[in-house]
Image (tube, rainbow, N blue to C red; front, side, top):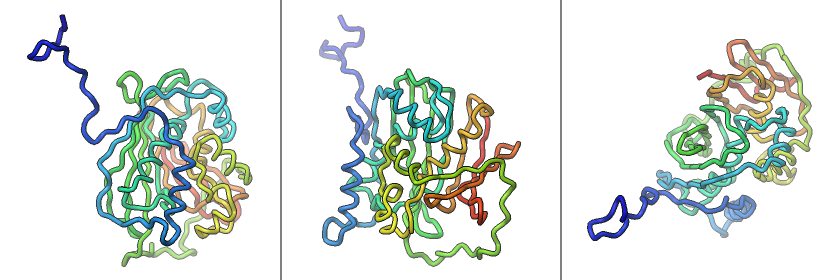
Length: 303
């Protein structure tokens, strides 16, 4: 006899996901989503309407396991030591296919290609072992104005046995003409960069190798033609590679639980030489080694 019968004596079914939730059985394939997004940019082949509402859908994927060979390749590209503990940035790439599926859906108000990754916040609740199976969720939230258009957040979580062990917030910009489309800062007003504690040569292979291990195959990072179509003379490094490389430089000093915020500034054209600086007050920065132009600023908050 059931411990939880319904009124007619039949066993109660376990509750399903809440309304507005789609539970996937496999990770979405990212390549076709990028191709679909690129086709949508061609006039007459699927232009996308603008909108004022983000979809209320949350995507979930359960029991995601880590491929240790892929993890090792990711560690090498980003400069992490080879360990069984996931880097703080690694769950981001596990959740990335869900983010792509969400932002390439027909009801998403903005075209995927051309969105600018403005900022990223990661909260690590505890160290996550590569042997743990993760339940992932992704949704979009908080569409709001920006001086150069509109911005929104993609919220991601990773859970183990119902415990949220990792959270990510990626803020994206949709560029649009606005009355305040200037930040008011001239090139001569840029503050001098801090003294560098490290210099790194970022070769073109960083774009292709990171694309391979992360699944982020955006041609702006791997193709000169793709980069030029979006206004860059050469491919640019992935912003999340830049964040990961900075955290790798801090490896061994980070607490077990912390939040790391970064703001992405100017892109890193490949190849480039960049300078890294970290302060005892848990702030860090990445800038061009020759010009001092900023690429990234970040802070770590313990706990």
